[in-house]
Every structure is written in structure tokens, then in C-alpha cells.
Length: 152
Image 1 (cartoon, rainbow, N blue to C red):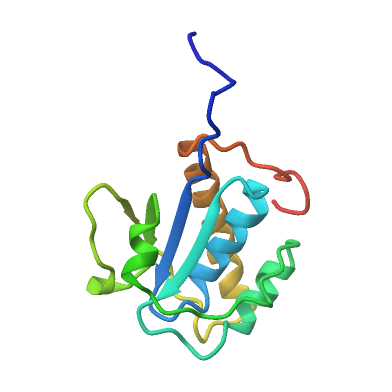
Image 2: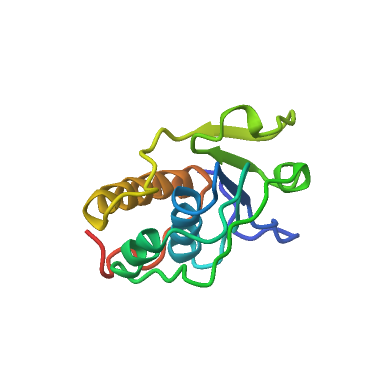
């Protein structure tokens, strides 16, 4: 294998943007997982095409159960600049609201919307997002940290 571990210049951290309609549930949980599992090795943003007033409290509760605190997060509006600055844009049911830029990698994750759902319905969504985030980190060449702590 001719893989070099030391690079003359530090490679910038990959940037991932998670987008859903309200930026209150799925995209916030995904961003929380990336921050938690990447240990800061990935720059992460989330936004919504029509942001809600506040983050979904059941999403906050579900993430808190596994030791990921997203209480301080606020829904943010999707901007073309955020998309352009991202290496990977993951959409979660934002329809056609997400602007397209050549050279940016796009993924669409089909996930149930936790809006209006109880904790029993949100837990499987949270866990599915974690599984997808781990796969995304692997594709980005980022080794996850803390994967054995507190999660199934």
C-alpha cells in the first residue's frame, strides 16, 4: 500500500450539510451525531427550507438518551452559501428547495419525519440516522470516536 499518513499541508476538515424542511428534527439529529461521532473531524451544518421556530423537543430527548446534547441548537434557514461551502449535502425530504451546485456531492436520506411523533417513534429514526452517519463518516475517511459508549 502506498498510503502516506503525513501530508505536507493539513487537509481541511470535510464539511457536511444536513437539510430538511423545518431543521427541527432529522437534520438536527444527524448534525448532532456527526459532531459526536467525528470528534470534531468533520465540519457540520444543518438548515431547513422552511425552518421551524424551535428544535423538536422529542428529538432533543431522544438524542439525550444516547448522550448527545442538541438542546442549544436552533433551526436555521437554508442558504446557497451553506450549500456551496459543503462537500456533502444530505437532504431529508426538503423537496426541490435545495439549490444544486456542480462538484458538490448530494445524498437523499429517506427517513420518517419525527414531527408530532412520540419518543417511541423517534428512537428508531435516531438510530437509523446514526447508522447512516457512521457509513458517511467511513466514506469520508473519518474514524468514529466514542462509538461503543452508550449506544446500541
